[in-house]
Length: 303
Image 1 (cartoon, rainbow, N blue to C red):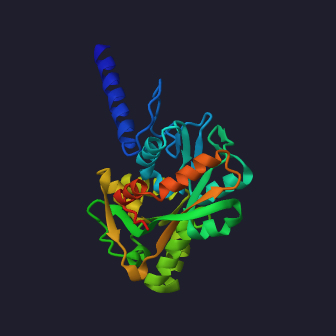
Image 2: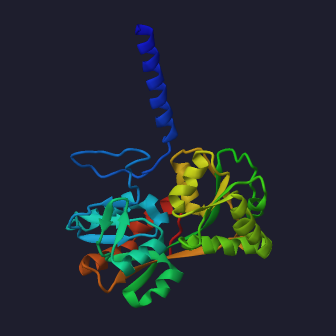
Protein backbone atom coordinates (compact mmCIF):
# COMPACT_ATOMS: atom_id res chain seq x y z
CA UNK A 1 0.00 0.00 0.00
CA UNK A 2 2.85 2.35 0.95
CA UNK A 3 4.51 1.68 -2.39
CA UNK A 4 1.25 2.46 -4.18
CA UNK A 5 0.96 5.83 -2.41
CA UNK A 6 4.58 6.66 -3.21
CA UNK A 7 3.95 5.85 -6.87
CA UNK A 8 0.86 8.08 -6.85
CA UNK A 9 2.86 10.90 -5.24
CA UNK A 10 5.58 10.63 -7.90
CA UNK A 11 2.94 10.71 -10.65
CA UNK A 12 1.40 13.84 -9.13
CA UNK A 13 4.79 15.52 -8.94
CA UNK A 14 5.55 14.64 -12.56
CA UNK A 15 2.15 15.96 -13.64
CA UNK A 16 2.70 19.23 -11.75
CA UNK A 17 6.13 19.63 -13.33
CA UNK A 18 4.71 18.91 -16.79
CA UNK A 19 1.97 21.51 -16.37
CA UNK A 20 4.47 24.09 -15.12
CA UNK A 21 6.73 23.30 -18.07
CA UNK A 22 3.81 23.65 -20.46
CA UNK A 23 3.24 27.27 -19.38
CA UNK A 24 6.84 28.28 -18.72
CA UNK A 25 6.81 31.03 -21.36
CA UNK A 26 3.28 32.33 -20.78
CA UNK A 27 2.70 36.06 -20.33
CA UNK A 28 2.35 38.47 -18.68
CA UNK A 29 5.95 39.37 -19.47
CA UNK A 30 5.61 42.77 -17.81
CA UNK A 31 5.96 43.35 -14.06
CA UNK A 32 2.49 43.42 -12.45
CA UNK A 33 1.60 46.20 -10.02
CA UNK A 34 1.72 45.32 -6.35
CA UNK A 35 -1.50 44.73 -4.41
CA UNK A 36 -2.79 43.00 -1.27
CA UNK A 37 -3.33 39.74 -3.14
CA UNK A 38 -1.17 38.63 -6.09
CA UNK A 39 -3.07 35.96 -8.03
CA UNK A 40 -1.89 35.15 -11.55
CA UNK A 41 -2.42 31.63 -12.91
CA UNK A 42 -0.50 30.93 -16.15
CA UNK A 43 -2.75 29.67 -18.92
CA UNK A 44 -5.94 30.48 -16.97
CA UNK A 45 -6.00 33.95 -15.38
CA UNK A 46 -3.18 36.21 -16.52
CA UNK A 47 -4.84 39.17 -18.41
CA UNK A 48 -1.57 40.41 -19.96
CA UNK A 49 -3.01 43.35 -21.92
CA UNK A 50 -4.83 45.26 -19.18
CA UNK A 51 -2.67 47.40 -16.89
CA UNK A 52 -3.03 49.37 -13.71
CA UNK A 53 -6.03 50.86 -11.97
CA UNK A 54 -9.40 50.04 -13.50
CA UNK A 55 -11.22 51.69 -10.57
CA UNK A 56 -11.59 55.46 -10.88
CA UNK A 57 -8.51 56.04 -13.08
CA UNK A 58 -7.15 59.55 -13.58
CA UNK A 59 -5.89 58.71 -17.07
CA UNK A 60 -6.94 56.02 -19.56
CA UNK A 61 -4.70 55.20 -22.54
CA UNK A 62 -5.43 52.71 -25.32
CA UNK A 63 -2.08 51.66 -26.82
CA UNK A 64 -1.67 49.70 -30.05
CA UNK A 65 -0.70 46.35 -28.54
CA UNK A 66 2.82 46.01 -29.94
CA UNK A 67 4.01 48.66 -27.45
CA UNK A 68 3.26 46.48 -24.42
CA UNK A 69 6.95 46.07 -23.54
CA UNK A 70 7.26 49.82 -22.92
CA UNK A 71 4.28 50.17 -20.59
CA UNK A 72 5.91 49.45 -17.22
CA UNK A 73 8.61 52.07 -17.58
CA UNK A 74 6.45 54.49 -19.54
CA UNK A 75 3.66 54.69 -16.96
CA UNK A 76 6.13 54.79 -14.05
CA UNK A 77 8.04 57.64 -15.69
CA UNK A 78 4.82 59.54 -16.42
CA UNK A 79 3.72 59.24 -12.79
CA UNK A 80 7.13 60.49 -11.67
CA UNK A 81 6.95 63.47 -14.02
CA UNK A 82 3.34 64.20 -13.03
CA UNK A 83 3.00 62.94 -9.44
CA UNK A 84 -0.61 64.11 -9.15
CA UNK A 85 -1.60 61.15 -11.36
CA UNK A 86 -1.45 58.02 -9.22
CA UNK A 87 -4.13 55.86 -10.91
CA UNK A 88 -3.58 55.07 -14.59
CA UNK A 89 -5.30 52.39 -16.66
CA UNK A 90 -3.97 51.18 -20.01
CA UNK A 91 -4.88 48.57 -22.61
CA UNK A 92 -2.49 47.07 -25.17
CA UNK A 93 -4.82 45.24 -27.53
CA UNK A 94 -4.70 45.28 -31.36
CA UNK A 95 -5.51 48.80 -32.60
CA UNK A 96 -8.49 47.55 -34.63
CA UNK A 97 -10.05 46.02 -31.52
CA UNK A 98 -9.41 49.22 -29.56
CA UNK A 99 -11.03 51.27 -32.33
CA UNK A 100 -14.13 49.07 -32.13
CA UNK A 101 -14.10 49.47 -28.36
CA UNK A 102 -14.10 53.25 -28.75
CA UNK A 103 -16.92 53.08 -31.31
CA UNK A 104 -19.11 50.67 -29.31
CA UNK A 105 -18.33 52.03 -25.86
CA UNK A 106 -17.39 48.73 -24.25
CA UNK A 107 -15.22 45.62 -24.41
CA UNK A 108 -15.80 42.21 -22.85
CA UNK A 109 -12.78 40.03 -22.11
CA UNK A 110 -13.71 36.71 -20.56
CA UNK A 111 -16.30 37.66 -17.95
CA UNK A 112 -15.02 41.24 -17.54
CA UNK A 113 -16.90 44.11 -19.20
CA UNK A 114 -14.98 47.38 -19.52
CA UNK A 115 -16.82 50.64 -20.25
CA UNK A 116 -13.98 53.07 -19.56
CA UNK A 117 -13.53 55.74 -22.23
CA UNK A 118 -9.97 56.51 -23.32
CA UNK A 119 -8.31 59.88 -22.97
CA UNK A 120 -5.59 59.00 -25.48
CA UNK A 121 -5.53 56.42 -28.29
CA UNK A 122 -2.35 55.36 -30.07
CA UNK A 123 -2.08 53.48 -33.38
CA UNK A 124 -0.45 53.61 -36.80
CA UNK A 125 -0.72 56.75 -38.90
CA UNK A 126 -3.21 55.24 -41.35
CA UNK A 127 -5.72 54.39 -38.64
CA UNK A 128 -5.24 57.67 -36.76
CA UNK A 129 -5.81 59.61 -40.00
CA UNK A 130 -8.98 57.61 -40.67
CA UNK A 131 -10.29 58.48 -37.18
CA UNK A 132 -9.14 62.11 -37.29
CA UNK A 133 -12.60 63.50 -36.52
CA UNK A 134 -12.43 61.95 -33.03
CA UNK A 135 -9.29 63.79 -31.93
CA UNK A 136 -8.56 67.27 -30.62
CA UNK A 137 -4.93 66.89 -31.70
CA UNK A 138 -2.47 64.21 -32.76
CA UNK A 139 1.29 63.72 -32.58
CA UNK A 140 3.91 61.38 -34.07
CA UNK A 141 6.12 59.88 -31.35
CA UNK A 142 7.81 56.67 -32.62
CA UNK A 143 8.64 54.51 -35.63
CA UNK A 144 9.10 50.78 -36.20
CA UNK A 145 9.85 48.29 -38.98
CA UNK A 146 9.27 44.62 -39.69
CA UNK A 147 11.46 41.66 -38.74
CA UNK A 148 11.05 37.89 -38.69
CA UNK A 149 10.86 36.09 -35.35
CA UNK A 150 12.32 32.57 -35.46
CA UNK A 151 13.22 29.85 -32.98
CA UNK A 152 16.65 30.09 -31.34
CA UNK A 153 19.35 28.85 -33.68
CA UNK A 154 17.05 29.43 -36.66
CA UNK A 155 16.66 25.67 -37.37
CA UNK A 156 14.73 26.29 -40.61
CA UNK A 157 17.49 28.63 -41.87
CA UNK A 158 15.09 31.49 -42.57
CA UNK A 159 16.97 34.26 -44.36
CA UNK A 160 14.13 36.47 -45.54
CA UNK A 161 10.46 36.83 -46.40
CA UNK A 162 10.73 34.59 -49.47
CA UNK A 163 11.59 31.63 -47.23
CA UNK A 164 8.17 31.96 -45.57
CA UNK A 165 6.68 30.62 -48.79
CA UNK A 166 8.44 27.27 -48.38
CA UNK A 167 6.19 24.29 -47.70
CA UNK A 168 8.29 23.15 -44.73
CA UNK A 169 7.98 26.47 -42.88
CA UNK A 170 5.07 26.91 -40.46
CA UNK A 171 4.13 30.57 -40.08
CA UNK A 172 2.33 32.55 -37.39
CA UNK A 173 0.81 35.41 -39.37
CA UNK A 174 -1.20 38.40 -38.09
CA UNK A 175 -4.74 38.28 -39.49
CA UNK A 176 -5.25 41.44 -41.59
CA UNK A 177 -8.92 41.39 -40.56
CA UNK A 178 -8.03 42.13 -36.93
CA UNK A 179 -4.52 43.59 -36.97
CA UNK A 180 -3.18 46.49 -39.00
CA UNK A 181 0.26 44.91 -39.20
CA UNK A 182 -1.24 42.11 -41.31
CA UNK A 183 -1.80 44.42 -44.28
CA UNK A 184 1.67 45.91 -43.88
CA UNK A 185 3.22 42.44 -43.94
CA UNK A 186 1.22 41.56 -47.05
CA UNK A 187 2.69 44.65 -48.72
CA UNK A 188 6.17 43.47 -47.71
CA UNK A 189 5.48 40.03 -49.23
CA UNK A 190 4.68 41.73 -52.53
CA UNK A 191 7.89 43.76 -52.30
CA UNK A 192 9.95 40.63 -51.63
CA UNK A 193 8.37 38.11 -53.99
CA UNK A 194 5.56 39.73 -55.89
CA UNK A 195 1.87 38.93 -55.68
CA UNK A 196 2.73 35.23 -56.07
CA UNK A 197 4.48 35.09 -52.68
CA UNK A 198 1.56 36.79 -51.00
CA UNK A 199 -0.89 34.32 -52.55
CA UNK A 200 1.16 31.31 -51.48
CA UNK A 201 1.43 32.46 -47.86
CA UNK A 202 -2.03 33.98 -47.43
CA UNK A 203 -4.09 31.52 -49.47
CA UNK A 204 -2.40 28.19 -50.19
CA UNK A 205 -0.63 27.92 -46.85
CA UNK A 206 -3.66 29.15 -44.89
CA UNK A 207 -5.71 26.38 -46.52
CA UNK A 208 -3.20 23.64 -45.73
CA UNK A 209 -2.65 24.93 -42.18
CA UNK A 210 1.01 25.89 -42.47
CA UNK A 211 0.07 29.57 -42.14
CA UNK A 212 -1.73 30.12 -38.83
CA UNK A 213 -3.58 33.42 -38.50
CA UNK A 214 -3.41 35.20 -35.16
CA UNK A 215 -5.87 37.61 -33.55
CA UNK A 216 -3.36 39.20 -31.21
CA UNK A 217 0.04 38.59 -32.72
CA UNK A 218 2.18 40.29 -30.07
CA UNK A 219 1.17 37.46 -27.70
CA UNK A 220 0.32 34.56 -30.01
CA UNK A 221 3.28 34.70 -32.40
CA UNK A 222 6.01 34.39 -29.76
CA UNK A 223 4.04 31.70 -27.93
CA UNK A 224 3.61 29.72 -31.16
CA UNK A 225 7.38 29.76 -31.62
CA UNK A 226 8.28 29.22 -27.96
CA UNK A 227 6.09 26.12 -27.77
CA UNK A 228 7.29 24.75 -31.13
CA UNK A 229 4.00 25.16 -33.01
CA UNK A 230 5.38 27.57 -35.64
CA UNK A 231 8.80 28.08 -37.21
CA UNK A 232 8.65 31.77 -38.04
CA UNK A 233 6.51 34.84 -37.65
CA UNK A 234 6.73 38.28 -39.28
CA UNK A 235 6.35 40.88 -36.52
CA UNK A 236 7.43 44.38 -35.63
CA UNK A 237 11.16 44.55 -34.98
CA UNK A 238 10.61 45.66 -31.37
CA UNK A 239 8.56 42.52 -30.60
CA UNK A 240 11.27 40.12 -31.75
CA UNK A 241 13.94 42.23 -30.06
CA UNK A 242 12.02 42.17 -26.78
CA UNK A 243 11.90 38.37 -26.75
CA UNK A 244 15.69 38.34 -26.99
CA UNK A 245 15.86 40.81 -24.06
CA UNK A 246 13.77 38.33 -22.04
CA UNK A 247 16.35 35.68 -23.01
CA UNK A 248 13.62 33.48 -24.42
CA UNK A 249 14.83 30.93 -27.03
CA UNK A 250 13.98 33.30 -29.89
CA UNK A 251 16.13 34.84 -32.62
CA UNK A 252 15.57 37.80 -34.93
CA UNK A 253 16.01 37.87 -38.71
CA UNK A 254 16.26 41.34 -40.18
CA UNK A 255 14.46 42.35 -43.38
CA UNK A 256 16.33 44.61 -45.85
CA UNK A 257 14.98 48.12 -46.30
CA UNK A 258 13.94 47.55 -49.90
CA UNK A 259 11.54 44.81 -48.75
CA UNK A 260 10.57 46.41 -45.45
CA UNK A 261 7.97 48.98 -44.45
CA UNK A 262 8.01 51.66 -41.76
CA UNK A 263 5.30 52.11 -39.18
CA UNK A 264 4.61 55.60 -37.87
CA UNK A 265 3.09 55.63 -34.37
CA UNK A 266 0.72 58.45 -33.58
CA UNK A 267 -1.22 59.41 -30.47
CA UNK A 268 -4.59 61.13 -30.57
CA UNK A 269 -6.19 63.08 -27.72
CA UNK A 270 -9.88 62.30 -27.86
CA UNK A 271 -12.42 65.12 -27.92
CA UNK A 272 -14.49 63.05 -25.48
CA UNK A 273 -11.57 62.48 -23.07
CA UNK A 274 -12.98 62.10 -19.52
CA UNK A 275 -9.73 63.55 -18.13
CA UNK A 276 -8.79 66.31 -20.60
CA UNK A 277 -5.89 67.79 -18.63
CA UNK A 278 -4.35 64.37 -18.00
CA UNK A 279 -4.68 63.66 -21.73
CA UNK A 280 -2.82 66.88 -22.56
CA UNK A 281 -0.11 66.07 -20.04
CA UNK A 282 0.38 62.55 -21.41
CA UNK A 283 0.56 63.80 -25.00
CA UNK A 284 3.26 66.24 -23.90
CA UNK A 285 5.09 63.47 -22.05
CA UNK A 286 5.12 61.20 -25.12
CA UNK A 287 7.06 63.84 -27.04
CA UNK A 288 9.71 64.28 -24.35
CA UNK A 289 13.20 62.86 -23.92
CA UNK A 290 12.22 60.32 -21.24
CA UNK A 291 9.54 58.65 -23.36
CA UNK A 292 11.83 58.60 -26.40
CA UNK A 293 14.58 56.93 -24.37
CA UNK A 294 12.17 54.21 -23.24
CA UNK A 295 10.95 53.51 -26.77
CA UNK A 296 14.52 53.35 -28.11
CA UNK A 297 15.45 50.88 -25.37
CA UNK A 298 12.92 48.42 -26.78
CA UNK A 299 13.88 48.69 -30.44
CA UNK A 300 11.75 51.58 -31.69
CA UNK A 301 13.11 54.73 -33.31
CA UNK A 302 11.79 58.18 -32.54
CA UNK A 303 11.37 61.54 -34.29
